[in-house]
Length: 257
Ligand code: ADP
Image (cartoon, rainbow, N blue to C red; front, side, top):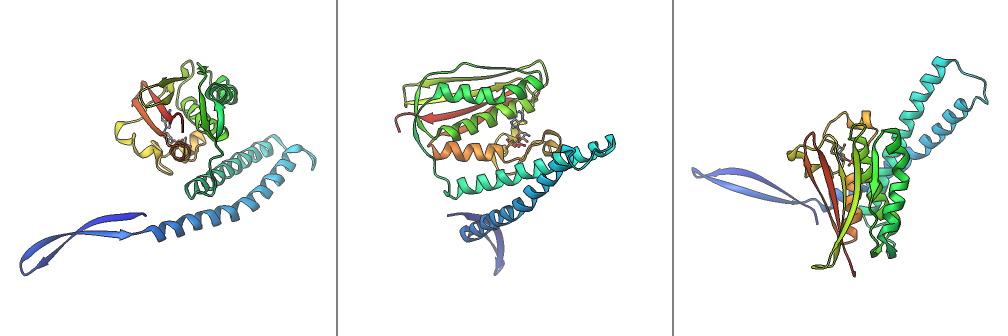
């Protein structure tokens, strides 16, 4: 259930009373999510077709374009790609949140997942001149390997995006026998996150800087998707960060579940 709490006050016979109002907004939230999903589906079809047209234009099959024409076209392609990413993220998040996608859990080795995520992000790190390193740890997990790799690549991609060249991004893991669990960390030397935003960045569409979506190509949904994936595995995700020094994101997953 989703409950919205608000405060108000009323005056009765010269006495002021404080009112605590609880609204059940479960149905409103459900309709909101349904609406988002419907609109996104409707947007994806024409957008995919538009992408096809733009691709055809840039392939040169319909005749060459002037240099300026190519430039304008590449801006169009970039923005269409951004919209597709946004719609895919919205749909993904909605499906995970609503339980339409269930985690396909099976036995997998964390080391393989760490290596796969790093390999996927290597080209991006190279382009940004960032040294990406991983210390894979061999531990058996009962998890959805694709979704864990998705969460890890998301953290690595953010670490690279928000770090200057010639810095390092490091992924490590360690297990704790106390409450059997494994903790994976992604550490960067980037711009960091102001302390008052440490909590909100895990919410939908929350970005530290409103220009992040435009300049860094993000959607503000990545961390929300990560959190949903990790929570569906019974784990938790959090971040420790110092502005201008860097951030470390942690994912803790229970073992033996
Ligand atoms: P986005 O698609 O914008 O990256 P996310 O949900 O993944 O969306 O991240 C939300 C916001 O959190 C980002 O826009 C950025 O402002 C901040 N952020 C995430 N990771 C980092 C990081 N490693 N260093 C600094 N800021 C970060």
